[in-house]
Image (spheres, rainbow, N blue to C red):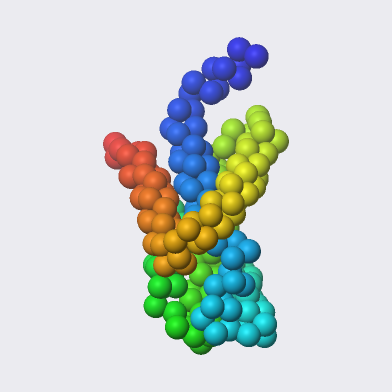
Length: 202
């Protein structure tokens, strides 16, 4: 027991980074969950048919899947932190792009962009979270990650429905994009911490 406490004291930076990754992910999941099942309602409002909705979702999932394989292959060479921040930033940008969509074709483009951003963020986030987490408590570490994500998404789904009912999809997208910008700024702390940790030359 004392050895575990001693190890925890020796890893304050890693624990801090673990928290940054966890809470920025929670913020992202909450912002993403605000749209959730309302996506179909929104797509119908801009003139999308049932086929358009399914094609838009298929574009998102296929782009995410294909590019996740590519990003996972190159992430170790390029740098996980940079790709993660890029993915979060692009996600915010394409979320704001919903405000410019006026038909199915625009929706397809936005969905492809969101697929790209998710492909950049997902494998790099998992790699960093695994790196900065304590190997002594893997179950608790990943349980917190998946549990927090599900709770955030569930709460956001209710909030999103309330917001659209009371206001509009435009207000919802502005809120989503703003939250994702804050999540991106949180992730930037990882890069600052990385620079501080570089060893000094003898």
